[in-house]
Image 1: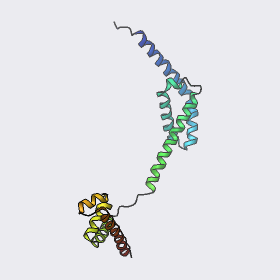
Image 2 (image 1 turned 90 degrees about the vertical axis):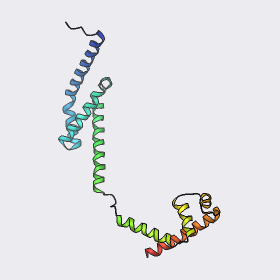
Image 3 (image 1 turned 180 degrees about the vertical axis):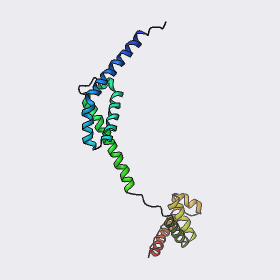
Image 4 (image 1 turned 120 degrees about the vertical axis):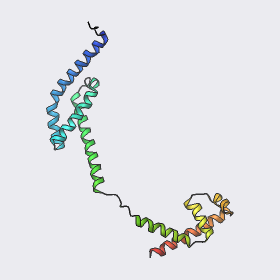
Length: 176
């Protein structure tokens, strides 16, 4: 002989069955209308069916709260429209990514740029090169760069300023 279920468990199972029965009747009542509306909105029977399934699933997951609403059908339609808009936005983003390719990687251009920088740096005096590399490229404050080079901070700033001016002139000359 089996043990009879606990009274509160039996009651909760009955509530779930009643809730499920309510949802089933809600589903039967709203299915055809939602499907027709989504066919018009999506322009595709398949897409309408997919959106409708997701909408009914989301409503079922929240059925205890949705059933208590004044207009559960309104909530169903709102969920369906939100799902349609989400799919539309995802598709638009995917299409945009597919249509507008990113900039192609040009390994040769990177090599040419690096070569131009190295050539321009070679034209500087060793102190100017050290000052501009430490302050501009490595981001050291002029005081720290001065300590490393054995110079005052103002000398480092002057050297870096002159180096940047010479670099600009060198890059402009190479561009011609």
